[in-house]
Length: 409
Image (cartoon, rainbow, N blue to C red; front, top):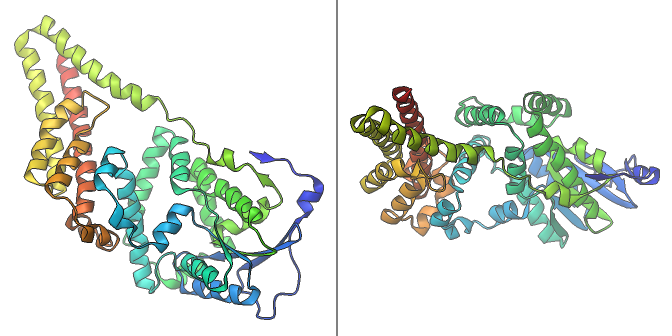
């Protein structure tokens, strides 16, 4: 992934001991010399008033030709274009199977928004400050991070099923945790030893996650900063990335390799088709072995368990009565067809009977700042319908399939 560098290349990047600019630099700024250019790496916390002030101070001190921010183009657009939610097509989100991803993104955003509300600063304010200042001083702006969808897919597809289960549990626990986090704690997290300790903990528990989420992005950010034009560059990045960026700046990184997606595992698809084959096989064989009444009882178990639990899931999301009925009707059939899911059917029905307005979509980030807001907002309620109906259908398949197998054997 990394092209071997020569000795001269390695020496082309070094922490500079030069005299800082007259205006002085923030304490968390690292100065590097890169092929005759000067790069100022500013380590920040993503929810911190002090980090915003640091960005303003370093830009005023060095007047850079280019400002790099730890954002990918999509996240940059979401941060700077507040009307982006208005243009979201919730039906397309369901059809493209992105409901779970969007719901998780909203949940994590909700956590950061609540944290920012307690500290009196908007999440990502330091990145937005870098974007705004680039425009004010006429500097080039570089969105230096890897696209978020590629990062998440590289993380997820390189985890085993047990690691995926553990990771999901950790994320859920972090989202619903009520642990108080004050501004002093946030500022402490910007200290190198605290961050190293936190990343070491992640690395020991989920080494693949740390590699894809942190180490690879260190390489990606370093290369994008290396390629940034101008003699003076300011890079606003999370403090946890600074050490890795400094380490990789001497090297030429293969961005194409870092953006390559591993193929999805065939195991879920195999299991998805194996379950209906086994169920249908037991029903047909049971007819000849035990008679028609036994088979009809097994079919009833399949219909009731799948339909009832999918309907309960849709109802738990406060879905429309037609949505609940559609989940109950679809689940027994979709559980036999891995290409369709009961939650998708129910979500589409919910979207058509109670289609979100532009105001609903515009208010989505604010509405989901509380747990109750996920149920109140029509757009996020559709996502909940998809997820909870699918969860109910999956439980129904597991219960009814096990029950039918027990009766058969």
